[in-house]
Image 1 (cartoon, one colour):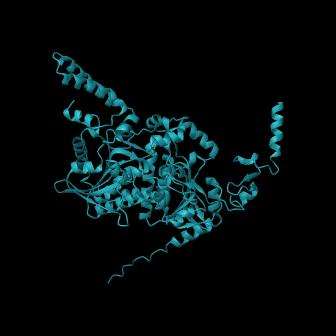
Image 2: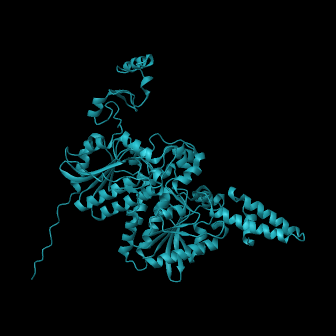
Length: 326
Length: 299
């Protein structure tokens, strides 16, 4: 148990249900340590050991719906948190050049390493209620995808690799979104990504919510953070339709196979990026370091590819996804 | 035959005339009559079929099966089905209130098709083309791996033969029971269509009622030309989800073909009776005369 963890515990009001046993154990330890009663060092040692074991047990045996809770954790790092840690000289670019600038999708230029500029496009959920409203809780509008496409084309023009950071409940289901062509925007972004002649690496950092996530997810390499999820429909939505009640969402979360481990086993993603103990929100920096290491390694692997080969590699990858007989 | 059955028989016989409205509120009224959902008119089934499943009174377009659609669009006797051997798998061993495997078996029976899309090649007014038609009665026309694979292969057949492609959509979206495999079909179909475009081959997308979710957010809206049938409902999210999210009433014509046309998302709304002619005309206008070959004249 580090001082960092103690700080997080005190700062954060968001303790997930399955984390509660840890919290109460931690409180006991705190009490004992502060009481300075002589002779209780042994007890503290024992409790600390117990804490470590319990933590290990909880986080290695997480159920899919529990991972979903971590993926949605309000303290989870978002794209704007990550860009600060992933490289230097982050320059945000704005606008779809057609009248709007969707806050739910952010993008810009980042020097990942000295001399290696990339274009980053990611979802942004926003922190704090005002910011969340401005960002529409990370649910993009059609013009958000237009903005993404404009940045993708920019990357292609200047031969810059693209990194996408995906964390969205899904594309926004709204009146104006429909009027302005939410479907078309997503479809076009998916199609454009499949044809781009630059390396693309997608990282699911939190929630990979359906088509709204895939619109940023057609990449040469698709990586997932350990506790992130990626799904065709939200477990709540799936439960409401197939079980006829949203209360069965944890069953749906299990049935849909939304976790990184399951999707890696099914061959649908390329790699799992380890999170700091307890989840990415416990340590932004260490989470970013792991992401960066993985991105650099994959970019390096793609260096030998010609521009045509990069496109072909991506098209072939998605062409082969499917499970059928015959 | 028991006493109860006797009474049952009497009741159902009553329905053969013009039955009173209370009895006919169900979908299948009788083998002879169908009630129009839009104007409540009772239509003699033979008349309905002759009229391409359009209500003769209010022009309501009934949903039609994939094979009915194929029959309506192509030159008789030219259909060659492809991809029939690609069949549904159950990669997640998905189980909700029923198992996915059971749902698929039931869907095969009710729809009379092997999956939610039928693909093949045919002629339309003499022009060769590739055609895929979704089957709404197969699990709501949902797109899983088979739908994606059949479309991808149809694109490849179109490219190989230099055929234009027509896809007729009618779907609730991606199929939940195949999880992320279904989502990936959106990328698969969209990238296959990019290849078609690279080959300068025309893709006409025809949207029939209803076209939603992962289907509308992938291949269905990527047509070089997009057509919809009158009053077809088309959108990304379902109206109920939107109402719950924004907490306001939606406009009356929201997500109809006419609404989408007004909002620049379609090229045209075409009555079912005119579809074959319109498609054939569009295909004809995109068939390029072969370019004169460059001949080296030498010195």
